[in-house]
Image (tube, rainbow, N blue to C red; front, side, top):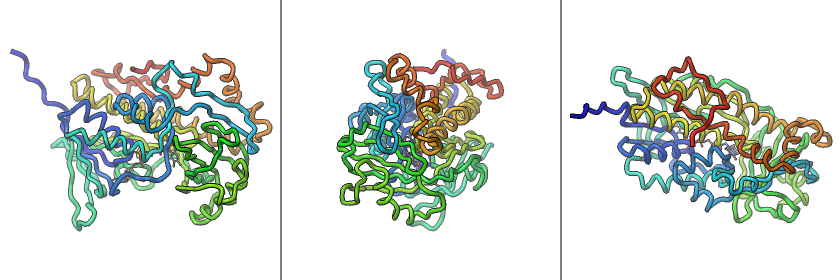
Length: 432
Ligand SMILES: Cc1cc2nc3c(=O)[nH]c(=O)nc-3n(C[C@H](O)[C@H](O)[C@H](O)COP(=O)(O)OP(=O)(O)OC[C@H]3O[C@@H](n4cnc5c(N)ncnc54)[C@H](O)[C@@H]3O)c2cc1C
């Protein structure tokens, strides 16, 4: 007679936030653990359509592949080829060619505006009977019943006067930069880090950059008019994100946009020469929560950490959190480890932010405004590295795969999971 099977460590997961990280976690878990009940709640009535992420690095592509959606993402989006760093007059200083990874790996930098990624995730989630999505549900408070082994959230449902309680074995806060889960755990103003003086305005625009010999993505180095211009759709929409002065209101920032475009873009266009479809001013931050696990509450992606958008490390890092959390929860459910693996998740993901995402993304933005473009090629080690990739293909491949350092293989921590003994060397081999 076989031994009775122990009951699984959890049967239900509540994910707060139906942004890209919450949707992806739901999809990964739903497909691997079809018997658990997954509930997503979101304040909004539908997907957020603000102009935000567009580029997802190789480790994010790996997770999108594991979720079974990479082909859809590639079909709707595209694989960017060249990225260059330029002076404001368009002179190329150095560049990197994405095509060096052609035939080398499936997991390549991929470009697709976030709202379209969200639609793909939703379409796939519709095929998962164990997932329910509750829009217009705003989480306002949290609690944990340790005796019962449950976590719960207070939720205000739009149009109703009384709040309701939703309960689950674990609650994952994927509720973005202003996360209520994080605020409830650590306090409203406790999100350690800093805010940049510089503000960023992100615009989506139709303008024929190709006519000026522009590549798929370029970063312009200039003390005042620093900006990024990247093609983001197959039909020729571009993302132009530029730096602005501190202290300006949103209205002032929007009013200055025609002046900024005329000063920055090739051809110095007037408003009738381009068509803007979205404009969004953003304050940019480098912040990381104190912990990404407290009891039965977990944090992931923007709810846990933020970085400026130059270099596309925000959601790429967030998606790596999701892949890690998925690996840990599945291993727990399959009895390969106990819940102390979630403390390892917490330590690993915060360390990845602190040692990789924060310093690299900070360098990415500073590089654009904090150096003389005339001397950049002589002084900037990163640009020198890019220059070398132009003639050394093996080195170029190494650099292109570099972001995979954000992934992590948790299997060595299974069973003996003890956060205090964690040795989370970034050189550790990642699982495939
Ligand atoms: C201009 C710009 C460009 C960027 N470009 C890139 C890029 O190219 N590559 C990249 O990797 N990253 C990029 N990023 C970062 C990226 O957009 C974010 O990291 C990503 O959107 C975070 O996803 P998320 O799911 O964690 O949070 P969000 O997308 O913010 O989703 C959070 C969800 O939670 C919901 N929510 C919030 N509070 C509650 C509550 N109390 N109750 C219920 N629901 C709630 C919200 O309604 C929302 O739907 C960029 C960011 C900006 C601003």
